[in-house]
Image 1 (cartoon, one colour):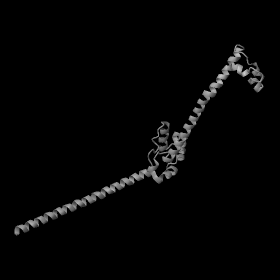
Image 2 (tube, helix red, strand yellow):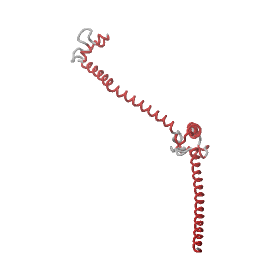
Image 3 (cartoon, one colour):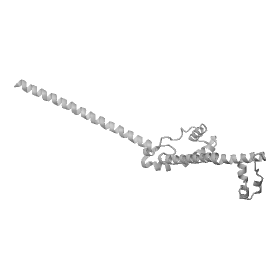
Image 4 (cartoon, helix red, strand yellow):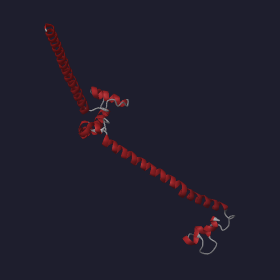
Length: 204
């Protein structure tokens, strides 16, 4: 039936007359004529149907999902760079206004990239102590040499906070000692008053 539809039953009704291709004129008019050509045409037609209605949609969906995943990953990476330092992975809220200075100067990613490139190609005999240590870490895929979660600003801030706490503790200790001394004096004064009162009562 498919071949009959392609060829047509009347003059000007078939696809051969529509496109003017002589090759279409060889399409058999009956199902039992030229079976191999019919099977070939049926295979091609089936392939086109399967590709157009099934496979092309699946491939298109896979491509769209892949691009969406890449876009989502890029957006997440860009958002992470805005909220965390690239080298130390410190949250922006912990650094406040110092975040820009940390990421642009103190822990510039390009400086670390240059240092890694320098250490990678530097001969081992020419390495200093720090370069030798970093070179060994790079060979062992060890990131312990990176200041993850650390920065000079936070270290100074912690030391300052610790020093302030120690000073507050010292002040509290001094105040407590003075309070204790005052309580002791008050107790002695109260005892003296009680003694005088008792002595007057005895004399009276």
